[in-house]
Length: 637
Picture 1 (spheres, rainbow, N blue to C red):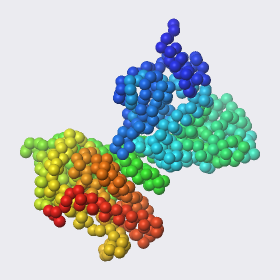
Picture 2: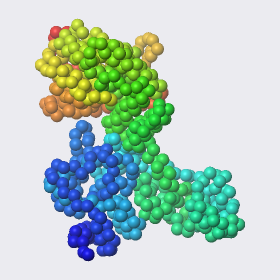
Picture 3: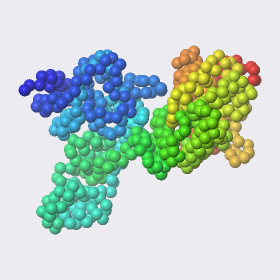
């Protein structure tokens, strides 16, 4: 019986690459199992971090937009018109989608089952090449240059960096087991065991002749049908896929799939005529993605105890160092690693709750300061607070006791990872910062309405808070109260503006670095207090006074201000870039010296770095001028 729908789908597919050269019968079998999906305008087929589908897609009618989040905005990456293929991620990885797919108008797409289509990749070389090209094009459409794509070891959002890892070069076994032809099977087996290899490359005059793997022994030796003293060529695979050293993760994955093999042999020029340099296995590809942020987040969420979490955290630190040393843009590193760190804290809280028992009331855990701003690229302090729902007076003591104990346990575990408790005790384990929603609302209200009287123990970081765990409605309730009190509150902005002016100046009258004159850090420059703090505090003031909710990151606050206050757009954009430069100096210091990077020895900087640092510090004068101009500082001067 004819399947009209399948025939129509085949007729459509054969109009477009890579299906033009695929035999009708092969396409018909797939078309018979293909689903037709109708999407209304603005409907999403999949979104960032959705679990992978069992299908990939081709547009039959309409237009599909592929987007991602860049600078807190949904940004177009690629347009898929009629005949365009998208949703190829399931061919390359097991981590979730890194892009959104949205119907830009009413659209029809065909959902083609991957399990049925995979055999065609091996059968038709042109299809394989087309898929690789399509995947490469969509990944490069993010606007990053190719060197960046190669350099990064990713994921997304859970990440921004997910697609990039597939274009990095592979680490592989550079000490392959080479055995000359005519060696006996038993000798090959012994050498494989002795060298702990799952393969042996058989050579003839130093050139590749074939390969023997564990699979050959399982298939051909297990039943005793072959003499172990026989020539190894009797069980050897002759068809070995040869590649050159610069092959990317994506290309290697496709070749393994296309050739239905577990190994790729690396030679000097990618041909059998040159020296063997090593071998790439499926395990190498998996390992290449083990520090991929998307994979790390998945490992974090599945950590069953703190030891497992500690192990994943060590890989997280490697992601920061590796990304920074390979010159990945700092904003992308901040955004990606910030998400990973939040997942680590979240899982730590879950594990501690498992240990203590269920909470006696609804609550929310908020990170403060650099953790909340996603700017903690070094192991610095942890700052946090717990807000719990209002409970009856008779329950309040027990509820508070539980949450203080929870905070102590979480903070202790995070300290083990390297995050010291805040020296000013801005911590949820401090009863001052573990309170009910009503109590916190009153505290914030008093500080905002009478800042001169109530801000002595209340740091600006309490306005940089980020949800980590619990009830978002509690956080939202506090946020609403804060912005209601901030509206048209000139006194508060006068106060915090003057506090910023009181920060110690970074440069002396003669434009030299204002280094510490005594103490532990004598002759070192306090980059955190005399540089970064100006930018962080100013961005916070701008954000609060312009009702910017949900944006904590200093760079993003400045970028957003460039849109809101377009008259001063150039200034804000300059502030944003110079903030990242200062953060880069701190991160570099922290990585090199294994500390928080707050103090740097400017005498060890190159002449160019000194000039760059001074340039970013000089911009602070522009920040101060803009603060004075916008907030007319008088009352607290």
